[in-house]
Image (cartoon, rainbow over all chains, first blue to last red; front, side, top):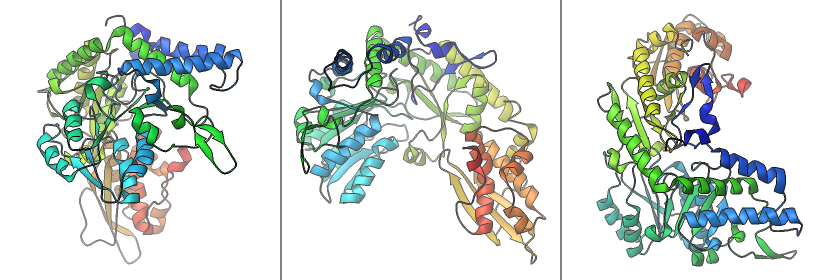
Length: 404
Length: 133
């Protein structure tokens, strides 16, 4: 993993004069390798054209590049059918798409949808909105004080005969790796469909649809070395086929009459309008980069970094770590410091060039659960090393010196 | 950075002078910054001329918001409510004596927003944030 850093141009910059960047905020968004930036630039420089229409050379090239990106993503998650992979703007749009189309078509007043207490707002609010509209019953798998999902209580909730279990694979706050295979199997035995929020797992562990066997799985490019503005929804073909379209307009239609239309084939049925073409191509390039390193190596590297960071933080005066032990975690260390607000922690760290996240990380209910208004989060990726963590610890010592 | 954490800010954060609650009070208001979860309540007592006699704040937040609240309340004691209504973003920055980026500015201005909302008796009083955004 030693030569990886040179592939990421931003890592060579200084945040303040003489103070280089130590980027520990990849759970918010990852940095981008040169190859992703080049792929997008090359598209604009050489191939820029609209896709799926026009017979000129550039249009054909652009279409081929866009669809090639889709194929790469499909292989990355271990499936074969490109018809099952819908490009969206991001994870949030993917979840909203499922709620608005599958949800409205299949859920009725009084139906139960099970979520968890550790969800990102993206997997709470779309269901809250739908629940208000059609009077759904939302239930939540509780989080234990150790930061794990309480599977025993999940078993009880399944007696409510839920129609859907929608849950995060990896917590963006606690780093907890949830037992997705088990949850999906239990949900299916209870007759429920499953949606996996893979925004934090696809980048760090990789996901395999065959192993997980969910009904829907969603993730974003920007957290896995790709650009912002593009994400993915994978869904089982027979479900996607039956779902009504999401947004109406160009590209999602086969035929349009003055008073009606027929929807396009999958996956285009869900991709109205000119999509984020350069971003899709960048997404494909990001997948190539991840494949060139190997997801197993990336996961192992992050495991080591997380364990190293937690070891250094354990026993650090006034630091309370959130979430489970290192072996149940994936690349995320969140904590509070006694008597010091996360904003102040982050601000002092920034003075040393260290980028961390401070706040509630789009998971307010989870922070409520732990009785804290906010936390500080350091998150790691393939380009981080032990040197970054040493600097981080040094930064925390400075925080202690100023506020302690 | 060291400018951001001037001694007065750290000192006021660690040992605030006006932290607490006033019961009874003539004016009170509470609000939060949903972005960071900072939450502040301000209580005022005024005399029959509507001049602030006592002030206290409670809640939790970062050093900037807490120091801002403490310094702000110190500055309003002896002021009339009409004068309080005229306080601006610049007054807060002058009290803190630092330059702030847009994110931390919200922390700094939360106490003023709460104070004004209490005095006006309405929510969402203008603390002058719009000028920077």
